[in-house]
Length: 263
Image (tube, rainbow, N blue to C red; front, side, top):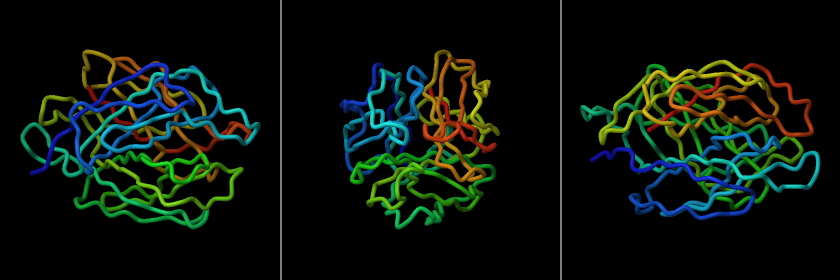
């Protein structure tokens, strides 16, 4: 039987050093774990990097295009752990799905097309690289998100050579909107066009406290490697921007960014 969401939370003072987070509810190998910084205490370009099993380790991984320094100040880190399978609404109807795959990046221009088991009307995709077999700083980049498929690649930063070792990747796909999930959690999914400037997102779900927020670029309008950064997450709103590597000029084309909020 498809299973609902299992666990989300926020931990403080997450830095460039590995820390372990124990999951109280999720057990077994069929688990996808997602994580995102909820704060912008350190301005250097960075993203969470995971080593995940039934518990998981996480660190804030800076890129080294401008200098080799990788120390990062403590950030608030939000995480979401789910069993793979359908995401059920409160009436037991599927509103999305979670899967894990393994991919290897042959070169910087290679893409892999993923076809979810279900089709969607207006989907948003969130992904997470859950292993660190390849030590070069990297993240997942998306393009061509459509009702029936999307493309992804392991995107290393522009100063690196592009190929990357095989990694385990989790992905979540669900339609835009506010969903009441089986188990009582509220899930809000949306998207907006934005670039390197901070964009304020107003939340519509009526959360009683600040949710855990995940976000990801859905398009490939600007070919420079890029991640999303978040700050000022409250029950009513948050801010998101795109961030390129430090060696670049900091200016990025307008992209469609998808986001997920859960509480």
